[in-house]
Amino acid sequence: MNNREIQAAWKYHDGTKHTYWSIRNHPHLLDWANRPQSFKIYPKPEPLPLPRDVPQTGVTALSAISESAPSSRADSVPGLQDLARLLYFSAGITKQRTYPSGEIYFRAAACTGALYEIELYVVTGDLPGLDAGVYHFNPADVSLRLLRKDDFRGNVAQATAMEPAVAHAPTIIVCTGTYWRNAWKYQARTYRHFGWDNGTMLANMLAVAGASGLPAEVVLGFVDAEVNRLLDLNTRREVSLCLVPIGRTSERSLPEPKQAPALGLEVIPLSQREIEYPAMLEMHDASSLASVEEVAQWRGKPPVLPCPCLAGEPVRLPRLPEEEQSKDTIEQVILRRGSTRTFDKAAAITLAQVSVILDHATRGLPADFLRPPGGQLNDLYLIVHSVQGLKPGAYFFRREQNTLELLKEGNFRAEAHHLGLEQELPADACLDIFFLADLSGILERYGNRGYRAVQLEAGAIGGRIYLAAYAQHLGATGLTFFDDDVISFFSPHARDKSAIFLLAIGKPLKRKPQ
Ligand SMILES: Cc1cc2nc3c(=O)[nH]c(=O)nc-3n(C[C@H](O)[C@H](O)[C@H](O)COP(=O)(O)O)c2cc1C
Image (tube, rainbow, N blue to C red; front, top):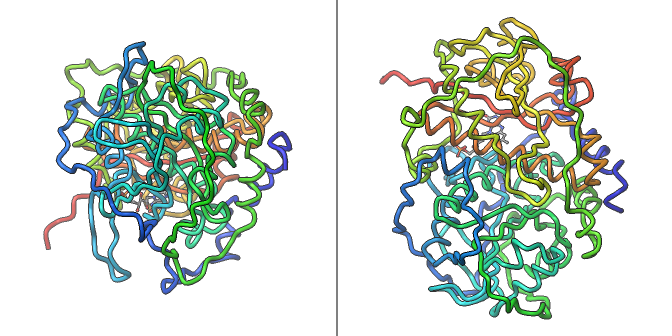
């Protein structure tokens, strides 16, 4: 299947929509006895423990999520402490809770179902404190395991058609998705979750890289088979999703690509048995890039998407003076973050708080599919329940103008309850942010791989929204939704768009002591 044959992405998207009836007619019972392991475990390679007490950057979360480190000509090479900070605050264990079903190790970034299907690998040249090699990061023991010795950055650079950020990176983090670990609960919809859960992790990773003074960006243009081969992935089970080159070096001697023979390393099975969902393998295959030429053609300008006309009287979002904004550091906020389980329905937040969230989360993702920087594939639509200074109702966020346009006024808690898969969270929050995208225009421009891009961008902006909310001591949670009902609710404005992502924001309900 070819990336340009975009009926593949439509087939997957339409085939994995939630509807009122799909939930009722196809209830999915969880097989707890066959629950997958949360960690990828290579029993043979010796663990290389990463330093744990790494100094904090001291950079505020709000500036870390909205400003990247400048990619100046000067070299910026991460040391082992930087790498440890990046990996831990992207994928490390931050909390542990005991449930009747067993122990759950919660991680730095939000993830659907706390199933943690995204793995991180490091392809590096020699760094201060770490020899060149291909490593796997295991959050369970905060260690790296050496899979291949030697410098393989040339292989990755070649797979990206010599993308400059990769060709000049001292080290590259590769994010992969493991189907079964998430599909155990979410079945074929997991391919969407790959983008969301990788995205929330990227929000942390880019913020911590920036706070550490290291340039970083998301690279989605690469020959899939080359990167998968380098990591020796069994691609029926696990696939590379994106690359994040970290730092910059002016060194000209990027090594030539090397042979990367199969490793045959033992991996502990995730479950007694795994169920394969062909729709996801097809979607991945159809969105893969097969050659360096295809990668070079693929990268480039984002699509020019139609700009919706003015919908209603614009409400300008107030800019909170810098000195009044939260000073909590990125590390403090990541450690504090956790998805809100119950919102206080009686609470309200302020327009200034909403403004801080929208402004800091939507300043553009540094990504190879969004050049020149600043573009965005997802549009944000809001249902406002209780925000001081805003009438309750449905709004469109016009990012370039930093305004909200009222689409319809009213109390839509009941509608939000329905749209968010009949959960209480979107009804009890102060506001819900829906991500909608012009999927036709995006697929037209990027082919099926545009589907990966739009989901990944939504997850990354969603991850930034989480962090901006928690920086202000608010609560937030990602949510899933009834696709077509979301579009109907925001139509006619959203008529030709598709529902991509949903997040609710509010104040967590403080439980009274018993
Ligand atoms: C994209 C996304 C969708 C989510 N959807 C739901 C949902 O529909 N209902 C829910 O209760 N929690 C949802 N969550 C919250 C996850 O269950 C939560 O992130 C996970 O349990 C990890 O916990 P933590 O975020 O507190 O670290 C979602 C999270 C994400 C990132």
